[in-house]
Length: 225
Figure 1 (tube, rainbow, N blue to C red):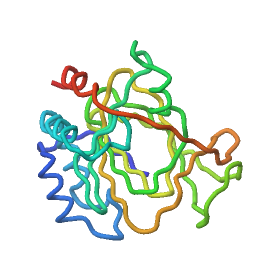
Figure 2: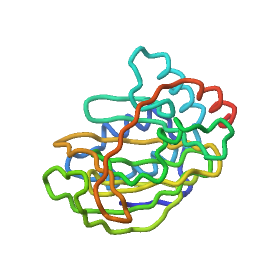
Figure 3: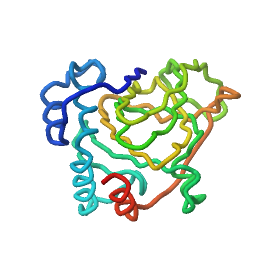
């Protein structure tokens, strides 16, 4: 994992970011090691209206959203995805058990893809970071796993977090206010099964949920514009 605090950068658009990624991404090199990419992503903080326009466009597409009502796919091809994700505080009066399952706060998990994520707006969630060395074969429920704690970080506005594929684990605590992150996801090569871990017992656990998507847009526009 890598964590980058905010810094002064030039404004970026979604299209500009996509062009930069496609022109500069090198296979075998970590996303966060691509020169200038972290700064390009941070630049979207100055272009929230552009992000909202792409969210509106994503909702107009016929392709079903399999990521949940709080996730909006802004771009996707065979290996690359841009995704905006909304994070709700537990104090919201509309927060429900369905939301608890959706956000899965406190559930320690990895990602079987590379992730570079920006705190786009709001106070951001707190992420509790761990790492492990994948053994190369699937883990079974109840199996012990050796994890190492790497610290707590807040994905505040302008901060960027990098998580390595099938190596970094995290659990999240809810933000104090409605927040949004913007993810760059690179998904290529062999994929291990996603991992969920009980950090107290250091054992693998199972997890599953189902979800839907759309009343969020009005709420987002009120908060972000």
